[in-house]
Structure formats: C-alpha cells, structure tokens
Length: 404
Image 1: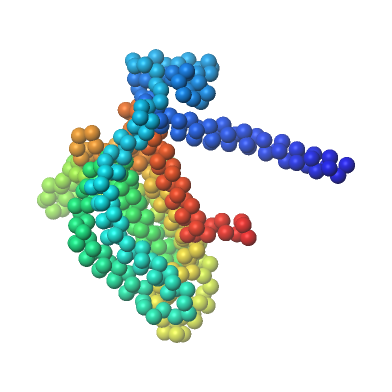
Image 2: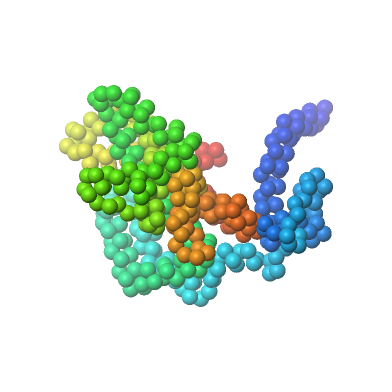
C-alpha cells in the first residue's frame, strides 16, 4: 500500500511537470538541436529546402515531415557541408594561423597585469589590514600594461586579429561597446541615485518619475532611436546648434565610424541608466543612517564615506544588476539598427562600424539569408554567453542560497 502511494505521488508529480517538460523540449531543446545541425549545412537563400535523404534532415527539418510545403530554391537542396566545419572556418577566417595565434598570445600577455591586479586586491581584501592601497595596485598594473604594450606592439597585434574574419571583428566591437556602455551607465546612475537619495531635495518624487521615463521608452526603443538619428544627421539638431552658436559646420556624425559608435553608446546609455539608477537607489536606502553618523564622528569626509561605506555596502545589490546590464548590452539591437543600421561601412564585405552581434546575425538571416553561417555564428555566441553566465554566477553568488 505504501509502495503504491509512493508511485502515485511520483506519477502525480510527473503529470504536473509533463506540460512544462514538453514545452521545454519543443520550444528550447529542439530549436537548439536544429540550429546546431543547420550550422553544419550549406542552407541559404538558394538552398532553402532540405535533402530529406541526407544526414538528419529527414528527422530534424519540419519541411521533411510533410506538414509544411517546402520552398523552391534556385539551387539543389541543402545538405551537410564538405568539409563539415566549413561555416565555422568562414567565420573564424585566419584566426588559427600561427601569426594570429601569436598576436592573440601577445594581447593576453599585455592584459595579464590587470588580471593579476584584480587577484592581488581580492587577496588583500581578505586580510585584516591592507598593506598596499587598492589604487596603488591598479596603478602598477596600468604601468606594466603600458610597458608590455609598447614592447610587444599592442596595436600591430590587434590589427592582425581584426583582419582574421567577421567573427572576431563583430565580437570585439560588441565587447568594446559593453566595456564603454556599462561603466558609463553605472557612473551616471550612481550620481543620479546619490542625488535622489538626498531627503532634502525638493521635488524628489517628481525627478524620480521623470528620470525613469527613458526606461519605459525602451520598449519602443526603435522609434525613440529615430529621434537620436535626427539629432545627429548632417542637418540635424547638433549641427544646427554648432552653426548657430559657434558658426561651425558640423561633421556627418553617422558617416564617421568612431562618431557613429559614440552616438550608439550615448543613446543606449539614455535607455539603460534608469534600471541601474533604481537598483542603486534601493541599495542606498537600505544603508543604516547611523553608519554615516559614526563616520562623521570619526571625521570622515564625503569621499571617505562614498568609497569606504557606500560602495562596499551596495556592492552585493549592484553586482547582479551589472551582470544583467552587461548581458543586455551585449545583445543590443534596436538602438543601433534604428540609428545606423550597422553602418557606416568600413570596407568591402566587412561588418559595419556599429554592426554588433545581434545586427550581424539579423543581416545574415533576414538580408543575406545565409542560414548556415548565421546558425554557426549563433552556436559560437551561445557557447560564449553560456561561459560568461557561469562566470557571472560564480562572481555574484546569486544561486548560492539555493544549494545551501
């Protein structure tokens, strides 16, 4: 009787979970498997229909199931590539040649002092006292970085890597965008949160509501981004102000690779800072007032309290927000698409100056219809983001409480 009761409980649990399991298999696992398989095929706009007798096409592709009508392409049905990793080799280009690997090794060596400084500061923080200030450690790391960069010719190594193929160019530009956008967003959000946290500020509630509006507008980011495009056009608001106030003819901002990149960074900061600001503001309000009162008694000034009390105490709250903001920045699409469409172009058959990861994938799928290349790119990005996510979980300890 007890055994039957246990089996009935297990069966009940399985039946409750079955719809969720089926949904995960259909909407998550199956697309992932199909996407990975497609990355090894020559599927494109000329070969949209599968060769159902080749490879796993008959099992994985719904067009082989007789449910959907297969499109008629100009070429033969798509099949597995020969060699099998051709799509991946096209994306990676010459990344794995001796010259490129040597350039990559040089860049790793040049950036190594920053990693060492981070680990040294962590070890010093664990001690009861700090014998070396954190700023001194970072200063030494930056000096070592500059010396190594000059000795190993950092820019020459970087140029070699940037000429290897589309993948590294797109990912490097996206990472540069993230490294600029996230710290600048944090500084702006922290500044505004500190101001709004001042209880003597009149109209505090009004300013909080106004400053949160850009986050609400992010749901229609493409439409709002058109306004940003108008501001930076050749005859846009910025150039009109330069002409009216300083009699200067402004540049064509969106045709200059560096200027266009900067415009995208500024526009995306506008959409993203309210989320960071609210997270920091909530963390600030959780700090006990008597902590600052004790610091005042000890004679601490504003900067002592900011770096000695405020930032360390809000760190557990802002780390997850920083990770989430970094991931959303890496996946940014609407702002760049609306303002520059990935341009301006920097050369023939090369990604544009603002063609980030999502724009590159969009262009490969919906404009060029290179499904094999696009899915291979998606597989590599998935592996990269999966690794970053695992690292971020270890860094922020978000899931620690679940397993304790």
